[in-house]
Image (tube, rainbow, N blue to C red; front, side, top):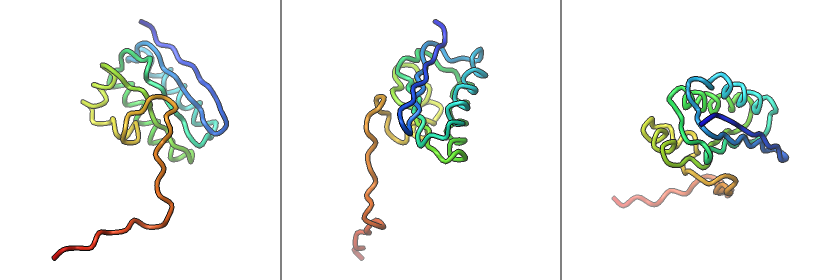
Length: 127
């Protein structure tokens, strides 16, 4: 089981697909791959984990760091498609919501839109 990746560009989206095994041996490669995607200044970087069979804590740290760094580039980085052991690791480390934006989605699923009608309305208090 080896590590591989592909990068696709479509308008304001850069999609990075990771496959195989993301462990300590590929941490620097993973960091470079994600940094290159962010340097393109897209609106969104989507990291597809659906073909990833294994991820260790160091690689998860790189994903979290890239997610946080994306803000400095004026974009959003999210992961999609975590499954099996990868999903379990992200849940156990408590980073699933941060990396997926709250709900694990399959790659390219539309994101729910926030209402744009102004501030949220509060329910009247009963008391």
